[in-house]
Length: 141
Image (cartoon, rainbow, N blue to C red; front, side, top):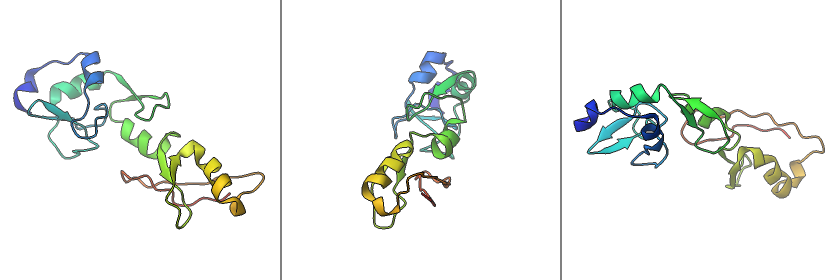
């Protein structure tokens, strides 16, 4: 934790603290500090948390990293980003197609590039794994 262990953080300081690796707001625990830089739990999930930062972070809401408008409690952001956010990036589920799009635009991509599989009244069923890479496992349209 270094010299920052005794520092107290305001809400605005917490919301402005960006990860030294991914550059996203540090909304995923544990948030660690090394040589004056902070790292989020997305990038360093097994580090020792900075207790002062986490104490302040537990009292505020964080905006979704993908810009969907959701406000999330500290520690909820990763689950939202991986499993629920309509604005997260997904890879096309069709074999030999490496296109990526945001989840809410996936149907448009399928309609434009995989027209043989498109129906007039589409029904989408999907599930995603919980790895950092978002993978669409199955889709029926």
